[in-house]
Amino acid sequence: MKVSELFYSIQGEGKLVGVPSVFVRTSGCNLRCSFCDTPYASWEPEGEELSVDEIVQRVGEYGARHVVLTGGEPMIMAEIVELCERLKGRGHHLTMETAATVYKEVRIDLASLSPKLANSTPHDREGGRFAAAHERRRMNVPVVQRFIGASPEFQLKFVVSGEDDLAEIRGVLGRLRGWTPADVLLMPEGTDAGTLDARAGWVSEVCKREGFRFCPRLHVHLYGNKRGT
Ligand code: SF4
Image (cartoon, rainbow, N blue to C red; front, side):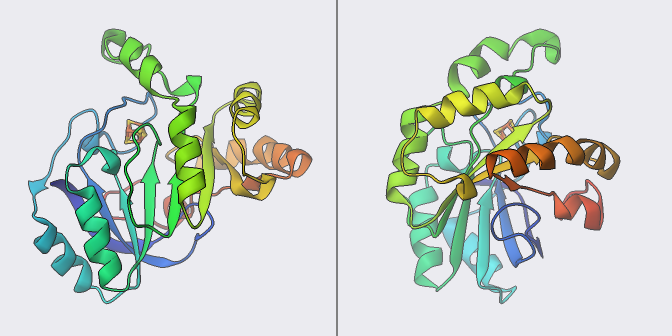
């Protein structure tokens, strides 16, 4: 499968924030978010073709237990089921970072589900030519529900850019079962510490009011918005 980068860093988001982890970033995505912070794995996918054997070997060289499969959209990769099986067979803890628009039975420990809100639709990017397809695909509630039902642990991570995103989040949550407020993470949209800090105030207030988790982007604060981090 095409992999844009494979590196060892600190998990910056979600329930496992702070945990040293190996990241496998597959290249290619079925969405085109306006705010995508990894365009080299979505808008203009780059990378090298690696076999499952090569990925497992490179992951193993770091000697870490936690592995994060991310993208792009790892769930569209033809060999993703096999890759998860092989990594689990080596005793790794697996987090799957996905927009949850495609379901396959994958052997993982944490499903990090990030269904995309209307704020992600790229009306102003590349003349808006991807907007209609993105809008059709970005939210697939039945797929999100399947992940919730099938995963040992899950989190629902919403990227928020304004307080009016909350109405859409409430609407999505109202259609889902089996979650508690502690499973819901609100993450400010932004790729630099200044933007994240500027949004942290109102996002944290919403979290206090609703009982949701505030989701930082620790890696941005630690390293900046750089590849390989
Ligand atoms: S789903 Fe993720 S990788 Fe794909 S375009 Fe959106 S932010 Fe980028």
